[in-house]
Image (cartoon, rainbow, N blue to C red; front, top):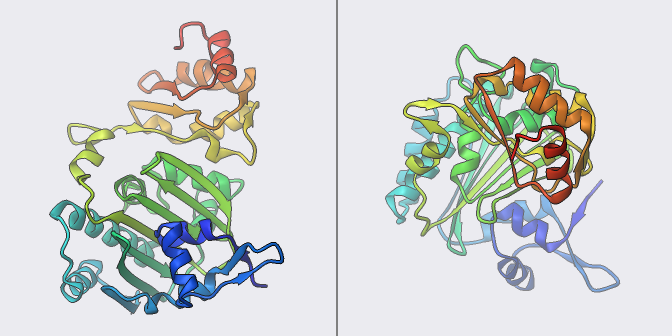
Length: 325
């Protein structure tokens, strides 16, 4: 069944501006159709199949995962594209690409990966897709999680991996912080991190085989990997996290102790945790008590700090724990 989406979703998926997508659609470069009300709709599969027609420096590869060395693929891509962007941008793209391709090699359970690079509308972007079991399904299975939203929440914390003997669980976390826009789509869901507007979201996506990761960054970005690492580390230790509470739930209310326990899983690996309540309308007494009294008392080496609370959330937190501000 074909799922059609609006122009804003296409812009997000491609890393383009809405005006750029409209321009491409008007020129017939990417396919679209209109509703009776005049709204333009797109089939993302058909749009993505048209990416090779977008012009500008681009490259598409299909690589077998068995025995693949991700750094060799990057060297090949970098030399063939001849990217003329700032050194910090190249460093970020190299880090992100190598980490995401390595995830496909080591975690996907697939046989091959598709790689696509393009430069358009002042953006440098890449996509890595594999034919494996899907990142969210694998994490759910290996960590015994109840649902896909729980898997996304675990990935957003950092230090969560299905192979702790060989991986630190930092690759996806830092990649999602380094690029302007990060999208991870698998198992019918898509997790989006937009660092330009400092927001994250989770949305339903069409079912697809394996995992698709798309990253984009402005070619004039001044962000550096040192800055990205510095925000979440002290010295050489990755000891800070910032879980986004709204990724945990289908709604905007969190009331139960079980929801708090799910959010807190694995956070004892950090010394400092900013619990981001942006987008959460209300919390219950049980949720607050479990998080800031029960869990905090049993994990004294981890400091929890609630941030971005609206008045209702702040009231419940301060009502339950007068010392928390």
